[in-house]
Amino acid sequence: MTILTTSADLGRTIRDRRLELGYTQQQLAERVGVARQWIVKVEKGKSRAEIEPLLHTLFQLDLELRVDQAAPADGQGERKILARNFTDQRGLEKHSSV
Image (cartoon, rainbow, N blue to C red; front, top):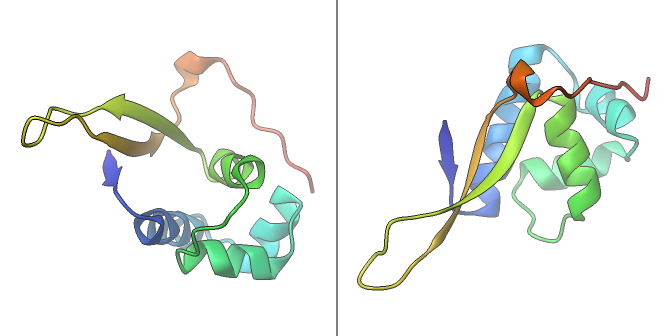
């Protein structure tokens, strides 16, 4: 499980998984239904990505997004975004847009 604290962390996670699966940016863009430039921006950690295409991108890469309450730091709670591989327990089917 990877703990992500910035949009750059999320971008690196997406890029690393895309490369692990052997997709080009163009192939992933086609699967998600976005322009290749959108994938480029997300992988660079641009913070203005729309949530729906972002969630669909994670889905196409067999990743899921979870938000868990972290242990308090200095008396304040903080949120962390966790990305991890899908498990078949969720009962979701992967749909390709290609």
